Length: 496
Image 1 (cartoon, one colour):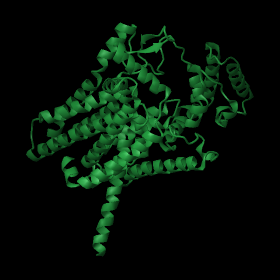
Image 2: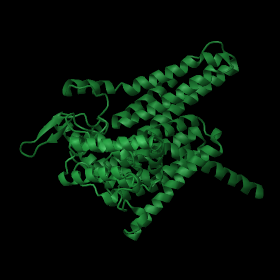
Image 3: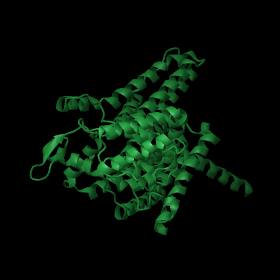
Image 4: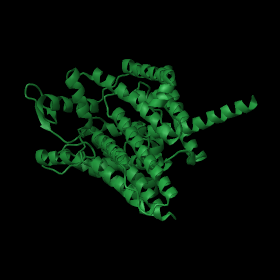
């Protein structure tokens, strides 16, 4: 990659500056601090100043720091490092560091495209990554996305580099007709260890980072099968190398969870190797009945904001429920649903009894329409997360299609939506048109499918959850654009 940059200094410098300017625009005009941001900042500050990984509880002067396991320590560790250098609570410094991290991510994505496709694709991938507003947008938010994307791209790049060395070894085996399997060389071991370390960072940032480990594991299992069923006996004996790769990646990726699990066991007296599914404290009520009811109709981010996040501090507006939330032909269900919503709105307290009533309604709906619940709705949630305009932390109204907001903001939503469709369509077309032109495409497809399938099981379809897939999307799109530009150049040469 360094040779490519040296050979095209002006190109990479110009695009990098354009990418920096884009990110600074979001930093200046659209910085975002959410409730999650405040939780992360509080954890980092207490960790740095008091040596306790916990949250502040109570009001001054009787505040105290209580140890928690509601968030994994990866992002608070990053914040604590920035706070140590630039002062506690310096969020501007955090966002500026995220901008630098994201620009490095662009180079890693370009290197991934170079290894998987070509140098031409690497240059295109750098442009697509540096000028991608979806990636740039989240550098101005104190959330885990920027770091998660960075380590995802790094893990995939290291894995592809390791696979390249394995492929070269296989070619040499076939050329020399070896009868003994080739022993892993130190460089391959280091690359697989680096892959595991990057995945470990993903997991420490968010529990769903483990999906990348699953995707790499699935691909290595498929590669093992390919070797086992190969006609070349030497390649069959080389299966051990693939198995060693899997063991190294898994061991390194999961190792950092050991001290975290021990800490939780000793400090909080419970076994928690990751973080609670709903980021809840041990004594906090989880409205499982309500969540299950939501999953019987939820497919879009609009309902996440208007309904799902109303619990437990707000009211549920029945007028904002989509028609699929209530079966009007089932009078008993309609009455029960409206009644439990009315009772909740009156008390604004989701008691165990109210939660159980939501759960009973959900059970009846699932029993009546199992295919819709287990197949149709998850697919629709996946589609919404992939295709929705990515303006959830920008000013445009969540109901962007009603065009009742500021015209400029509506135009922004439409523009973001079309641009997102272009990225995804280019990646899909590259897969459908000529997947064999993309080396190790199975690894990329495995990651896209594993992550998308998991996201379909979630009750809150937030578009940001698919951003970790964008390094792969950009690589695939660059393969298509590189092929098109090459064909165009060839046709121009022939016409001359």
